[in-house]
Image 1 (cartoon, rainbow, N blue to C red):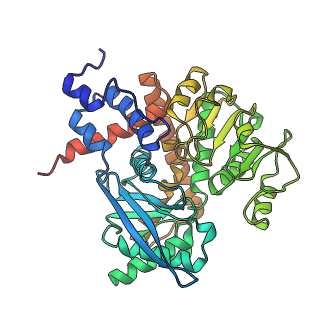
Image 2: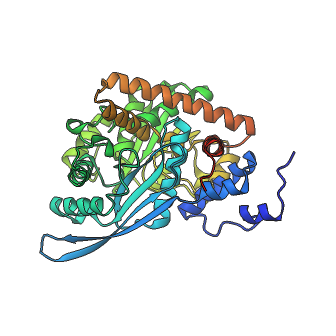
Amino acid sequence: MPFKRNVYERAIYKEPAPIRDHENPFESMKERFDVAARILELNPGFYEYLVTPTRIHITAIPVVMDNGLIKMFEGYRVIHNEILGPSKGGIRYAPDINLDEVKALAAWMTWKCAIVGVPFGGAKGGVICNPREMSEGELERLTRRYTANLIDVFGPDKDIPAPDMNTNAQIMAWILDTYSMHTRNTSTAVVTGKPTELGGSLGRVEATGRGVMDVTLAAMEQLNLNANECTVAVQGFGNVGSVAAKLLAQQGCKVVAVSDVTGGYYNANGLDIDQLISYIRSNKGTLENYTEAEHISNEELLTLDVDVLVPAAKEDQITSKNAGDIRAKIIAEGANGPTTTRADEILKENGVLVIPDILANAGGVTVSYFEWVQDRMGYFWTLERVNKRLDRMMRAAFDDVYAVSRKHDVTMRIGAYVLAVGKVADALRMRGIYA
């Protein structure tokens, strides 16, 4: 029976008015959430509860720069949801961060944790800055002040940050130290993605890329594709893209193209991924002037005739303008929000299997959970154990999402939302509303 709503419900679900801005990441998240809500016949009150961030923190961060002048930065921490457990999510440093982006990323973390069965809610943080133009000392002072300003927000049982765009293990170490100085208690579980010497987990750096590999291989099995006969293109050769490319190559795939901010690099006979990783390390972190491949644009890479496309760069890379030209059979979204809602419709019509970001890149938060557990136990696992448990959880999550998508005859993305929103809604129903 079709899902019928009364006037009140139509107002809540904002039908039939269209989403105003399909490129706005938070609006895109809400549009997909709406579809899942209709399938689940979600109670209107639950809809409002689950789509609305629990708390939004905006903080001014004064930093004494190396030249002695004070510069003000703006920082965010959005707690989207805490129904399944303490909130969890990365912190990114970038000049183009905005609040809607952080809100969307926080919501995606909620759904991501639910999909893989991790007992966390979703959060995300960010600071508007250009880390490439800042010294290490300036970044440390920025990080410590940001942490101090949010000292009542963070906590191993409250909100647990992690690395994201332009942040790393060192920045997590500064957060750990600053938090511990304020609380007078060394609390290693307050952050994840930190150095192993400070309680970080083995396998955490590679976790997101490894998760991309896991779900890509699972998708190949569903499409009866042999990894040894598959070609792959990877947009974005940072931590996620480079690890995914390396691991897929180790599984027998031929990686024919990769890219970074300097453009794409293509070789029909396959690229030497280990050589590319070494080249980046010796070339100031970029592929610029790499000569062992044909130079193409990032846009051209997206439309190459390959079996698997891994967008692992930034948001809104696959849009209504280029989705019709995509020739890959599988898209595994290593980045957050690389595909717009209109592009999703085109890809569905063309029979492309899209493994959505909230599933494909959930390996990072899964191993972050492992790290949190190890810190709480004071007992650490071998790399083999970490990878084995990650592989199992990612494969299980793929199977669950695939089954839901088949049951409701929807895309994998909508299937992922239905699965995630259903889990969080069930938990909310059991917990009830405190009044």
